[in-house]
Amino acid sequence: MPLTQSLVDTLAREAGFTAAGIAAVPDGSAPEGIEERRRFEEWIDSGSAGEMEYLKRRNESGEFARSSVRAAFPWAQSVIVCVANYNSAAPCSTDPAGPESGWIARYAQSGVKADSGPMRPSDYHKVLLRRLEALDARLRVSVGAFESRCYVDTGPIVERVYARYAGLGWTGKNTCLLNQRLGSWLFLGVILTSIELPAAELPIFAADRCGSCTRCIDACPTDALTPYRMDATRCISYLTIEKRGAIPEELRAGIGRNVFGCDICQDVCPWNRKAPLAADPELTARPELVNPALEWLASFDEADFGRWFFGSPVKRSRFAGFRRNLAIAMGNSGEQRFREVLQSWSRSEDPVLAESAVWGLKKLSDAD
Ligand code: B12
Ligand code: SF4
Ligand code: SF4
Image (cartoon, rainbow, N blue to C red; front, side, top):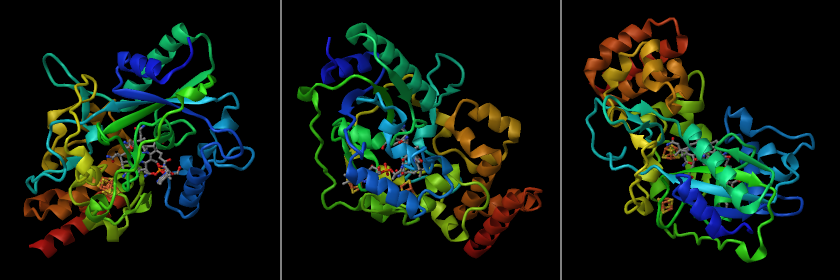
């Protein structure tokens, strides 16, 4: 049976995805298309990737590994892109919330639904990878043997470019993949394959429907966005998850109450207003992680942190980074009762935590 868009979409839904499409890997010297390749290289060269060294890796020919799929996998002919909806009915980060609460990005709130007892954390990387492997195996039954690699985040590929090539949506001004029906609360996973996509199956590109809207750009508290481009070194998601050491002082106030990741530029997007809710038992928001009390999170020792976030993306910030983020959020809260915790952290042996706590105390004094 030939590889078709409808076959992949049907089998991907059976494997637990919300939708899927196939993109052809273009021929020639610019595998990802000249425009995207130029954008990626300009982005890295301008320093916008900050300390995310894995994005800057080059292959033996000196090309960026992430913008040259064919160089890494000469057999690659097509990329199957699968999306999983993680939109939840829980409040958004931009909804009113008390000053005592922090924010953990939706993508890291996920857990596995349980019949009784607390939910177990889940990590979309693992959930999607398992589903991709099931889809990969199922496809072999239908189309025969082929070469393939499954990736969620970690492959040498800019997933959003291929999602757009697969007709699954457009690149929003906030740089997220936006689907007209599903919005942008979507995880992506890809299967690189050696199967050639029949010309009749080439997808229709989704039109850019951002129009004259600039809500995401206007709402970003750290001015990380210009249309279709992000300076990651200013993005709260980068600062609270990827950045090790001290967070630049001039960006700390903008971090607000975000202690892990940031959802603002998606919360304000009009296309997310009517997006369908996910009904995914493995990607359901854990209620205790929605608007969590800063005081509760600050009471965690390293063992509690491990217990609460074992198997969750939150582990990526590490305990030290998480407490640094809490110190900044507590300073931003204006809540004088956080002084006690901040005072104790200001005497910490961890110089980054101590300095962030001193900053938080000063912020509280200024607010008093
Ligand atoms: C590094 C990374 C980050 C970095 C940098 C983000 C960034 N904008 O690049 C940081 C840590 C900041 C980050 C944050 C987030 N991330 Co992230 N991240 C990645 C990762 C690993 C690589 C992205 C990358 O290569 N960036 C490099 C830049 C240059 O690429 P880009 O912005 O996508 O732009 C390219 C194209 O979109 C295109 N392009 C851009 N604009 C335009 C305009 C036009 C007209 C055209 C033609 C093309 C075009 O050209 C660019 C160059 O190739 C991907 C997974 C993967 N392997 O792809 C996940 C990924 C992009 N992240 C994801 C998520 C969920 C998030 C967060 C929502 C998490 C959170 N809540 O905190 C935020 C969203 C912030 C945002 N507004 O993008 C999802 C995005 C899903 C979606 N619907 O888009 C991905 C795909 C992970 C996944 N497997 O699901 N992330
Ligand atoms: S995730 Fe937050 S900080 Fe990053 S670009 Fe979006 S609004 Fe700005
Ligand atoms: S907020 Fe507006 S400009 Fe930004 S991604 Fe959504 S539609 Fe596009």
